[in-house]
Length: 131
Image (cartoon, rainbow, N blue to C red; front, side, top):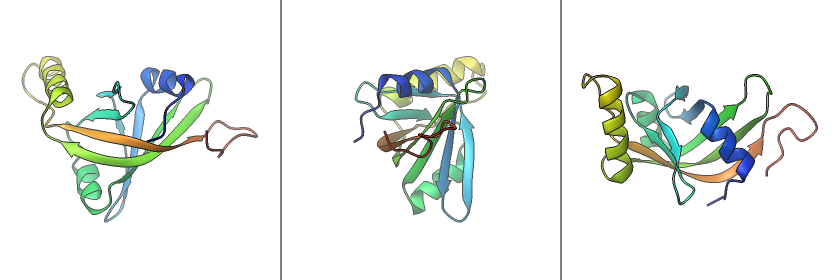
């Protein structure tokens, strides 16, 4: 597993994440129910994400992209993802989503993403370089 440095963690905590998967067709979606676990994996609460889950059944590779809209500083994390329907993080995001949507919607689990590469996507001479 690739360890995330403090700058990458700061960006992941501050900004929306975009998840990219490939299965029958490429798919990219924004996610807001997200966190960095203590062990360095990335956690995403699964509210809808139907195409993402279908793609991950065919190919568990995933890309997470994050970028500051004003600074254009950005990173792409490439790794693998696994859907986990219950447990500590699934319970947490279920409670958060039920409260947010007044019990009308709930997450159905989480994606646990294991980072394998971190790539600089900031425009400039270091763009495309692996950290």
